[in-house]
Length: 236
Length: 294
Image 1 (tube, rainbow over the protein chains, first blue to last red):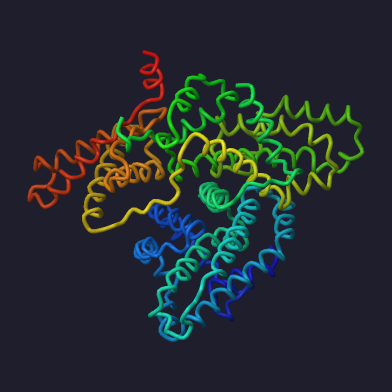
Image 2: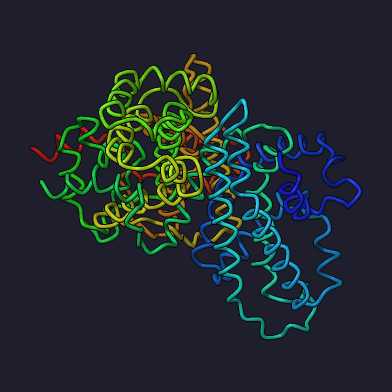
C-alpha cells in the first residue's frame, strides 16, 4: 500500500520519526486495534454523541465538558503528550498546531484517495467497505476542519490549559484519531476493522445530518431514491 | 394524550416502513406512522445509524457485484444494447448466488448474511440497470468504484432522511447531563441488562441484545429521567426489548426488596430508576395496529 498515505496518518498519531513507515511497529498497531475494539464496544455512547456534536454543534460548551470527562478515560492512552502540550503552549499556538495537522491529514488523504481505491480493488481481496469508509472519513475530517476554521479565538496568548476553547480541539484530536485507525490498520495489516459497517453508519448519519440536500443531477443516489421512494409516495 | 408522550421507532420498524413495498409489508405500518404527529413519532440517532448501516452494507455489495461482473470486463463499452441486457439479466437471475459468493469470499464476518441486505442489494441493482446500459465504462467506474460512490450513497440516504423527517422527529443532539445520581442509577440498569444477558445465555439462547440495543435502552431511560418525555412507547418488531425491560425491572425490585443489595446502599436509586422505567412501554407493532383497528 502506498507509503505516501501512511505518512500523513502516522504523522497524525505522532509516531516518532525513527519508527515511521517501513519500521512501523506492527505490534503496537495490534495493541491499538484490540484497544479500539474494546473501547468501541464499551464506549459507543460517548463516541456517537461526540461525533454528532462535533459536526452539528461544536459550540455546545456544556455538552463538551461532559463528553470530555467521559472520553477522558479512553483518551489517556491515545494522548499522553497532551498535558505537556497544554502546559507549554498558548491556545493560539495549540489551535494552529491542530489545524495544521488536520490540513496535512486532509491533503494527504485527498492526494492518495484514488490510488487507495485502485490498490484495494485491484488487490486479491477487493473490499468496498474500506474504500467507502476512506471517503467517508475524508469527508468527516474535512467537515470538522471547516467547522473549526470558523472558531473565534479571542485571547490567543493565554496558556492552552487555561483556555476554554481547548476542549473542542481536544475532542477533535481524539475523534479524528479514533476514526482514522481503521484506515491505518488496513494500510499496515490489510485487515478490515470488525465494526467498520457500524462506524460507517455513524459517519454517514452525521454527514447527512449536516447537509442541505442538493444532489447533482447525475447522482446515482438521487436516481435510486426517486425510483424506489418517490414514485411510491406519489401513487399513494 | 399528554404533550410529552412519544412513540419511538426501533430499527426494524424503520425498515418495515421505508421499504414496505419491497418487503411486501402490511401497509398498516405506514398508516400507523402517518397517524402520528411529527412530535409524537421519534427516532433516536442510534436507530437511524443502524438503519443506514444496513443500506450501506447493501449498497457496497451491489457495487461489488457490478464491479466484479461488469467493470472488470473491459468489453462492456463495446457490447450492443441487447448483449448488455443479456449480461444484466444473467446477473439478475443469479443475483442471490452471486451475492452470497461475494459475501463469503470477501466480507466474511464483516457483513451479516442474507435477509434484508440481500433484498435491498438486489433492488438497487435492478433499479440501476438502465444507468448501467446508458453510461460509459469510465463514468460507471467513477460511480461504482471511485469517489462518486460515497456522494451517491449520501444523496440516497439524505433523500430517505428527508422522507423520515416529514413524519418524524430525529433526536440528534440530546443534552443528557450526567451527575453522580444518574451514574448510580445507570449502573443498576446495566446490572439488570447483564443479568438479562446471563439468563439468556444460561437458557441456551445465542441471540443476546446488541450493544446498540443496550445503549438505546439507556437512552430511553435518560430521556425519561431528564423529563424530556413523560412517557415513551418504544415500537419494535421482536420481544428483545420487552424481555430486557422486564429483567431490568425485576433486578430493581430485588434491590428495593433488599434481596440483591443487603445493605440497602442503592435502594433509593433503585426506587427512582424503577419509577422512571415504569413510564417506558414496549409495544409490538402488530399489537398497536390491532389496537388501532378496534
